[in-house]
Length: 75
Picture (cartoon, rainbow, N blue to C red):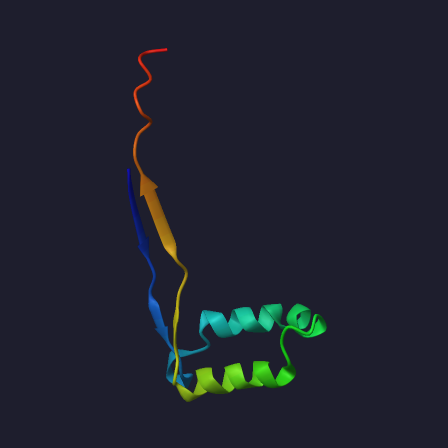
């Protein structure tokens, strides 16, 4: 059996567009804000950090697994 996982670093900053993590934060923000898990200031700080170009995030994780079923004696 084998496994391999690959992810791509995504640099932040206006020259790179809006990274996936920033978009995800925007999608989750209403629920996180309503449950008190995130403040508007936290969300604004995240956007400021991404736009300033100080961060690197990770893109989607691709996981591949392969192998074969053990021989069971022919049953």
